[in-house]
Length: 359
Image (cartoon, rainbow, N blue to C red; front, side, top):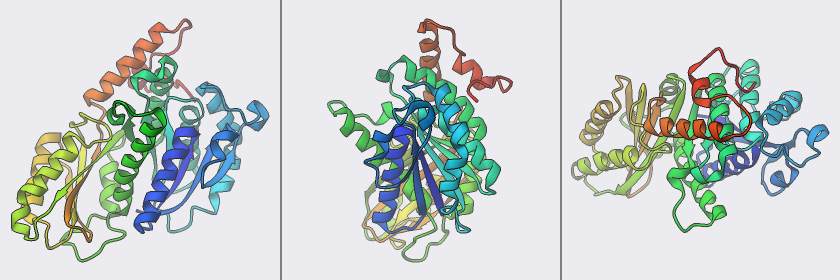
């Protein structure tokens, strides 16, 4: 899938950088170009991407201070400037646009839904979002922001791939080191998803291509992506269990949104040396995924790579019913209750299409 990335806010800019770097280092060529947008000049300065500073007349390059309503207002006022900067990057090759943002801060959570909406009006390709959910320890304001933003973002985007910070922070890590590791993990997952079918080495029996990814994400709503790998034997017949184990691990312990096992659609790509990939194992894994997710739309295929390992890449579409989402919304609800001033209930907002909670 040839894609153009748009990172919004501090977390969005860093994850976009990691995605672009992973694609370049692997030589996949799936990321056509990338742009970072922010209201804080200091967050844009270290990024090795083209950047756009918005809201200068309102916040003078100092950020919106976690106020996502202000973030939405600023982005709405400067959306044309962002679209102009992006125009030369979205060529005829582009098959999708990805807006990447942390949902807890002000610029990302407020600005990302605005840009998704405007991009959907301008371009006739899918506009997806990658949203980063704040961890439990990131403060009540971040929970409330994310709850409100998530409702709006899911409504505007063709699909929203979620990354749960809590799932990927290791104990004992520094904050900066922890987030860097999270970005690398997510970059590998999304990077391989974009590369599937674009940069293959060898001939697959059934290649996973752009249409398979788009059709899986067509379920809309929220999505999650998982990855796992294991050493492979040289003989494919010996790798039946290896393929099954990799797919199970990708779903059970390697998802960007843990416990997201109820899905409307799913895709599994088995990556590795075509001579080592067990077709029997791949078919058994696809059937297991169908039973595990309760979805009748489970697509599967190969991703040929020159490697001595077998890897599994799993994409789940329509995971709104997951326990992780319910737990997050409860945190956001509690944060609203704890706030001194009255703000919309993010869980109720998510269920009520008549409530325009952010834009």
